[in-house]
Image (tube, rainbow, N blue to C red; front, side):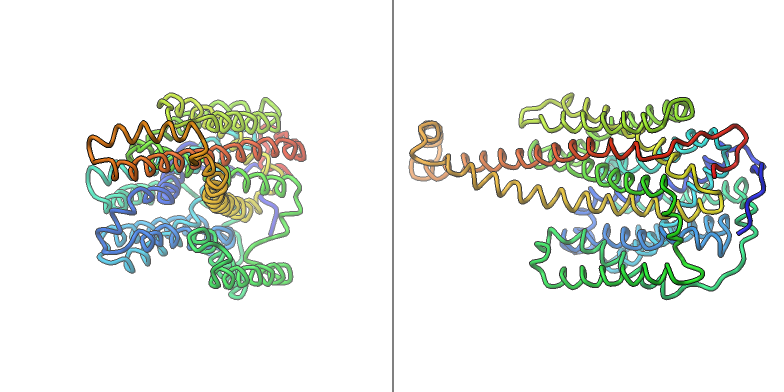
Length: 521
């Protein structure tokens, strides 16, 4: 490709362009989590089990992952603006079908189409923002982008719970229609393709590369989503899908490295900043999605919070992220971004350590404070990390890079959720095996508690039933304690993972954009 003309800038004010592309992106990212708390309602309405209803989430994530890394190629083939509008239209129409679904099959197909339409929106929006703002203001652009991709998954469960409780689960899909229409009108009016996209030559589609990519990503996503439910490699179908995923991945790498016009340009990984940034955003995705899935589960299963309240408990994290992204967007060009990222990971480690000190008698403020700190940390990480990771790439490679960057964040999130849910179950079993020995007649504290419970219950249900009920109550208390310890272990693991990321931050070369510079080469 030709080197982009120096000094190109869009005709419209960059913040109007940012509002146009982020409207659709926020809507799309929101849909990755908005249906989580509505699954029981969807299952009941469509005569499906809760396990079957999980395909409403899995189908979306699988199709979304397949499109993400190829977004740059599709933008070069169709034109970025045309692709953006087409994806939003497809996503909006699929939302209507999902809301009107009369069977599980119908809503799963609609969610697949939603994922295909929405998969390209994140990297395309990121590329448009990076190219619309001058280099010295890219931190501000990434702050806007971060508000969409970091805050939306946090807001999603709360919004989904409120809509489902007050209206119907169908409206979590119908609300996409006015947003989609508005986004199409704004993009048509304000967004334009830069010269290096407009001037792209028509190319033939790498059918084999795309098929291999779809195969390894699709099978990987299914394994991560269903692995714990199927007891991982104890299930033959998990072993088969894992083998297929690995083989397809290797074949995909060989194909993309040998073909003249690859659908994913792996050569950009030679850029050190981008390679380090890709590793860190993968870990960041794991930390983000693992923590926002663990905390609502903790509140609902151990503290008996309703779904809406458990979602609201995460809201302070979104507020903290919004505040810090605005502040960091202004600081990123004045302070070494590596220091900001390191500070962010340190703050996030502190926040998750605070969550590791939760117990069964905590008040809401004990949950709110660490969430605010975690939200502040997200802004310190996400904005400078994106700016530094993409800041040394030429403009014509940004579209390809953003696809890979967003894909790895999502794959990291899938790994994070899969690992923490597995560790949660296994750690609870391990703690139970250690602690059940204390429920023994030889333990004077146990016998004292057991006798007290028998005495309280005997007057109500009789001595024989009281004896059984007293043992059951103490065993349930044990289960709650071992489950609490499993959550504590997970939060501590996330905290240590944050600290382990800090040394990697200083592998970045510092990016020093100059005013008026179009791209940092």
